[in-house]
Length: 113
Image 1 (tube, rainbow, N blue to C red):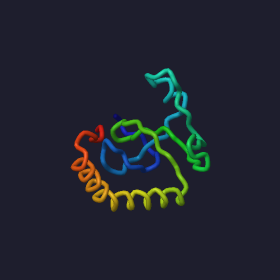
Image 2: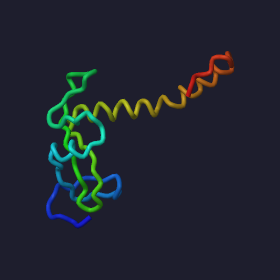
Image 3: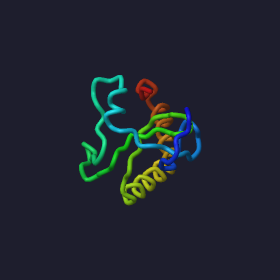
Image 4: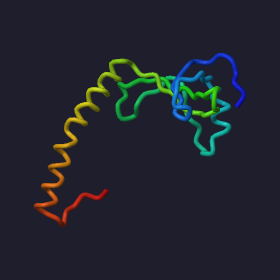
């Protein structure tokens, strides 16, 4: 893809580095979507947690052409997510041990994977 000038520097998962990215206009993104349902961009909230507001934007890397969606989220929610993820990582060995013990006690009731 020929490199355009400008753009916001963001992490591109295909390039695996910070690259300039443009905002793709909503109509352009939705016109090229294969699914029948159009994506919603702009101010959004989580259906299960309406107190969590965020802002969605379609983007395109100007280095490789990869298209992706970014989400702006309040720092307090990012901090909360980080705390929960850290705690889950700490509990993972315990959960695995409990699962093994449960399988030893009752081999017939193994969890589906």
